[in-house]
Image 1 (cartoon, rainbow, N blue to C red):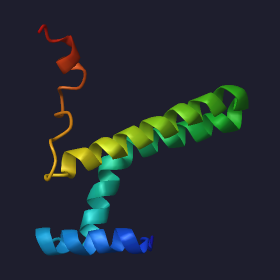
Image 2 (tube, rainbow, N blue to C red):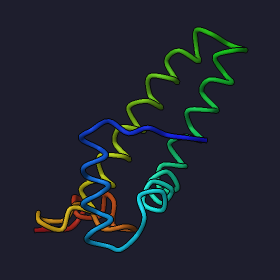
Image 3 (cartoon, helix red, strand yellow):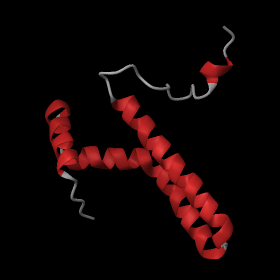
Length: 99
């Protein structure tokens, strides 16, 4: 599989390569591995779309939204220049803590 990133993404990958010492292909593979749960949900939704179109259409929309959420959270978790996002395993726990 060959992937051609946009210019913006290419610049980011080159910068990450410089900062981490990892080649862009490794960085891309790691990002895709992190997105695998969202990809699995999308595959399942598209399978359902083939068998039950009405129900599957709603599922595809939910899966796409979840995929965007996962990617956005991964981006927050990787951004060390900002206040970190949720910590793995703590999702939803902050809201339930008494103040």
